[in-house]
Image (cartoon, rainbow, N blue to C red):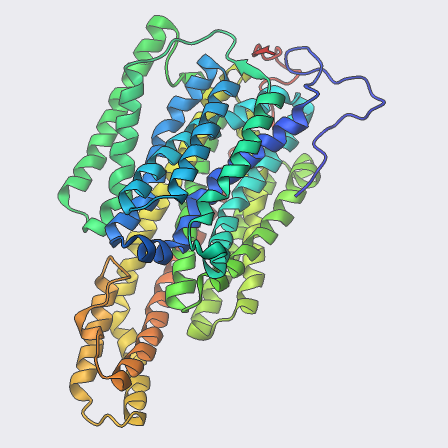
Length: 571
């Protein structure tokens, strides 16, 4: 997606930047660098999901280790978000961004050359932490290097491209595994970050100018561990709870996270009152629009995070598609994102304001409802060409939201609080996705288990026919084994595990079982996916209503109506 993010022309006099100086002449190059960084982060958030079988086979990993490969990135990323925003304000956003980029590149190399599951898990922890350092600086950097007249378009493009990159990660992962480049199987998904990261690191050092908060806040040595502990206590059980069967201690951790969060907030308020500096400065919450908008943003990511989680599960395990088939079909969602995001910032938002976000939520919800109708009607015979139109509709709604929302919300806080607000928005987004995955996982797999009886009934006639065609006459025990097999598969937290009742030594019986199991999976997964789609559509409608509480048009806190932002910028 390419757009001219400059509002000025060569013949016009230089537009005044936020601090009263001419706009940064390297701002477009800086924009390209941070765009690449945000893109790399979100691609790596989702790309692993479709490469799980390849990683598991190559590293001889059990399913618990594979889940940690996915969870490690999310946990460390979420834990560093609030902290990293404040670090950028204190030590300089460019410096912290480049440290994060360098660490992310090194961690990607370590992931790509991992020789065992343990090395990959540790490398993913480091990769997520470095992404947390890097990504939080991006919106603050954009807030500094672009003058108000250009900033909205830049933030909108960033939101649209990075929003669709999560979908791109699914497609890229499927293609990489299918092509098996150089015989490296899954490894190129990480190794590709190395040359890109090195190039972005060099370019960033040259074209991004340093900035920090005008009055350097003091490092909050007690607030940091409190924040990290609260986030870890919340995200860990949400990530691991389903696999572990939701033991009592997971609920205890969630309750402990809420208590620790209350302690953290009370401490931060007291610290700010005494020393005038805190890890989270509550000045951003004086803006009612920012506070409500952040809550709606959280709700939106709960819905789409849950959808992204079960989407490819349905395509691959429900419909039996290959990773490449599922990934390329999923990528058509990005076409809709491009349409919505490409038109929202310049053409729609200036005219219709917040109503664009409202329309985005409704259009996205309509796409999800239409998807559920298709699944109900076609079931296991659903084809890519039938899915693509609803993907585009859903993507348009998604693009109408992600492109303008960040700029609208950041525009409600003063420029010196850009790093703080950026960290909060990124944290809310990540926690929303984590909560969406956790809640959707509970609903989805409960529905799969609940539909297993109907799935076995629907697949049984096909199994009888296949057994008869293979000359198998004693079928009663086999049919009983099949029903048990379907139930055990539905109850299992490890989809790679093959229950004993599903394993048959006779090739004729095994072949008949394989076809019937695939048919049963399509029934149970289709039923569960329809439920999730309708649930997410309902959440999106609520989010659309929430967007109505925002200002009709963006009112940047550093616009002409208020004093210029005092963000200090150094060369």
